[in-house]
Length: 116
Length: 113
Image (cartoon, chains in turn green, red):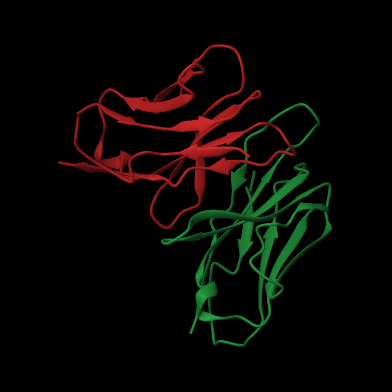
């Protein structure tokens, strides 16, 4: 199994530019999560999807952030315009979800974003 | 709302010594508990989980954790650590309200020779 795939692994961009992070979940998983990790704030859940539908986006910092999941095998997290304080490692995770059952989440390797 | 507290941000320990990483959660309903490990420059990997049944759960590399409902704790232990156990460890909890996990702040385990 290839696991959760994220691209790019590293991204360096200038303030004001648009950034798009990509994620391919594990085949067969129907839940997908986007997290952000920084030294100051630790691991934060930004948004998650069940069956391609956004369920909770209360962790999205502001309108500059948006996430989509057009199909079961692909999701994007977009930042427009980017700011230096967006610098962080962004993780995607996927899981199986059925009502009444809890399954573990599998994490991708992360995208290290640096905004200068 | 669910919350998870890891009381120690860093735990230094010598190789072959025992270690305990503490985790407390808050929940008034059924809870599912997890420990994840993050090695440098990598994503989080599941170490062990408690979903139901036996309150003592074990991982393949010698870690174990015990679910204690009365103390709302899920501490992680290993009787003898190795240098390779140096990593950050995250405790997480869920009450299956939509499959969300709430993570603790993490504990950095530093194993010294």
